[in-house]
Amino acid sequence: MSSEFLNEEFYRTTSALFLQSVYGYELKSPQDPFFTDIMTLNEVLSQATLPTAFLVNALPWLEYIPDWVPGTGWKKTAYEWRALKDRAMGDVYNWAKQRVVSGVDDSSIVSLTYKEVRQTGSSEADADEFCKSIATILIAAGTETSTLAMMWFIVAMAIYPEIQEKAQREIDEVVGSNRLPTIEDRPNLPYVERLLAEIVRWHPSAPFGVPHVCTEENVYRGYRIPKGATMIGHITATVRDEGVYKDADKFDPDRFLDPNLPPSQAFGWGLRICPGQHFFREIFYFEVTSMLAALKVERCKDESGNEIIPTQEMLQNSAIACPVPFKVRITPRSEHHAELIRTAA
Image (cartoon, rainbow, N blue to C red; front, side, top):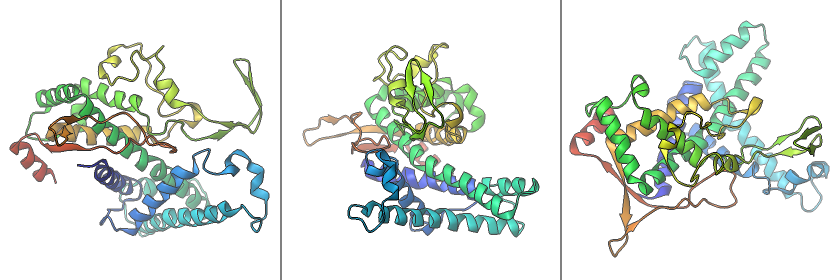
């Protein structure tokens, strides 16, 4: 099973969860225009946020150069991407809003937020702008990063099969083999909880976060930071700090047995910390525990019968931490587990 196939499957699953939770929309098929537009939007977003993608990211004054000047082709790209963003986020939002005004109560984030904002006396236009922005952030920031977290989970299980077996034993003891884990089981799965925390630390989906602009001059540890400076948080440097995480390159859930060990900074800091982190943790828990309960990840073999072990290498020139292509075998743990999968589906 190729990493390309896995990425597509995880992305579609995650997108379906987000579309349902955020908009109350049920994904119809991989060709669903709401899904394909969001997928394309995420692809261009990962390019746009890369500091080296466009010279204007480093030299903001280039924005004011007329479009007809040679070398400003990036402006056409920006216009096209803006139109894509407006369509991708506008169409599905309008669909969700129409359900709200028609009296359909689906408990989606858009439905609940729109009603609350309108009750404050805000105009329809202001409510639309606010709700659409919230939904856009959740979808754009959540689908790709959640998918990558699952990809690194697969890599970790292939590299460290003993960790997979230990997590599966815990699930078997707590949950049994006749059902999949639920949220009620979570407090009784401490090793799985540490495994989830370690995946987030081991390979953060956004290793440099999102660039921000300093709104006022500041001095930090003797370093002057001028107003308007671009700030990039090196998240990977914090989660691979050997002074904090011993053998940081190693995947070791039991490092979090130490109560004094700080959680990873994968979700950012302060006011700009990821607003969807709790949503992500819930989805991630269900995806990982369901796979551990019913499936097993194994290494593929080459023509000589030697096991092929995935590496920790990442694709270059990307704003997200995507593993290089790899192959694994994913099969039901037993025929009983295969039947459990069919029943759950």
